[in-house]
Amino acid sequence: MCDHTATRRKYKKDFLTKVIVRIDFDTPLPIAKSGPAKKIYNIVKERFPITEEKKVMGKQFVIGHDVTKERTIETKEWHYYSKNREKHLTIAPEFMFIEYDKYEYYEILRDDFLSVSFALFDAYPKLHVKRFGLRYIDDIELKDENYFDWDNYLKPELNTIFSIADENEKISRAFHVLEFNYGEDYLRFQFGMFNPDYPAPIKKKTYKLDYDMYTTKLLDKSDLEELLNNFHLKINSFFEEIITNELRGLMEPIND
Image 1: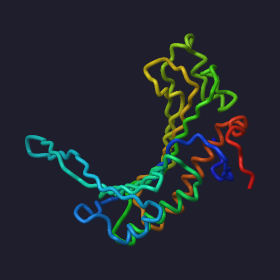
Image 2: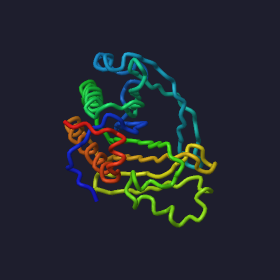
Image 3: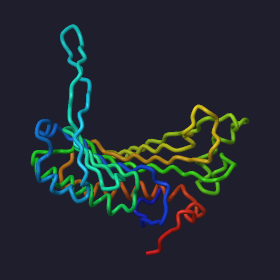
Image 4: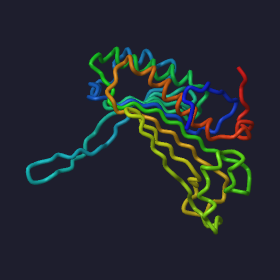
């Protein structure tokens, strides 16, 4: 479907509303009492100078011979924010992720993620990653009262569903899922008119593109950079495959 080796384009503007990169650990980090190692904070403090410790309540199921009991457990998470709080790092015993509300360039995400990940591996040498994921969410919103006509902006094949609806004005959501299996890597692509006002009928021209790529193979420190680059290129090439030059024009391409 897509050329995943295609050159990555850059734009002055975009429709990204959320970007998340995350790793889950095979065994919990020993940070429940004292928090992440000091050397980790020394790495993250320039990028994420605001620190907040939070208590999180969770549930644990204990299976006995005759009955399964549920109990509430308290865990801690350490949250680090940029000065403007537009990017957010979370470190917990079971996982680490960075979330961007304002995304600029991939190079920034890559440097943020690798600096924190490598610091974790250096502080906890026995660490392994059991799941790695990269997710990009675009919310395209245009000022156009023809809510269901996206053919000038997106690949027409994405929206054939509207041709079978006799009463478009009654549609409250048209959202779809495609899942791809690449052997050890997976891509979950959700797309369509999600409609933030659901279940009310659609009254805005908005379209969501949600790419979530992940793997569940066991990873070491040396695996992360190449995998991150590959996931980014695959997601980017899917995005370029389904948008039109008219949408690219709205985003204002940067010619390197």
